[in-house]
Length: 193
Image (tube, rainbow, N blue to C red; front, side):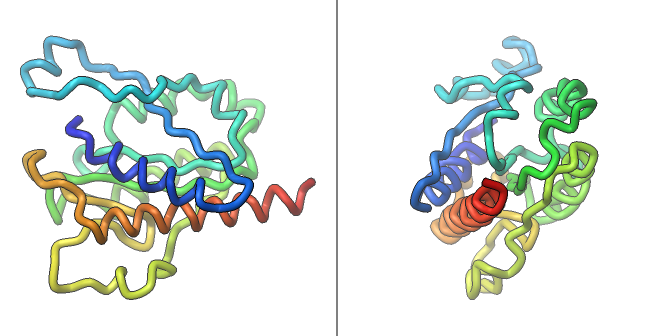
């Protein structure tokens, strides 16, 4: 709602695009809340990123799905989008495609890892290959002096009341995740060509 996921997504896109031969696109899912509710929540205008439809997922070789967390799970908007992919599930059109996850939570106890764990079920039913970052980000994974979002499941940030912005370290982790999954996606695509 406040642009935290989009900021991480842009760094992930940059990281993916840094891999030779990889084209990375940024999409957003349709909003499900009425304008009146968004206005009462002081939500800023939506991004200029195009709205994706479920069938457009078939065009991609891999994905990094990002969403804010609501009570330890992905936000309803993203869940509604995935619920609309039943036709793709029936034909297993996304099976074998690598997918990563990233997230934004309101607080440190806001469910970053539970959000990833509950989101993996969506990937599994589609037959997608979950690609966590593990500890490939190196020393950045062990930062203890500053508040840092993210985990071995994927990049993350803490939004707080919306005023806290992703830190440089969180943005670097997002760039790393994009580059990491793009490299794996390229290897997988090359082995099937």
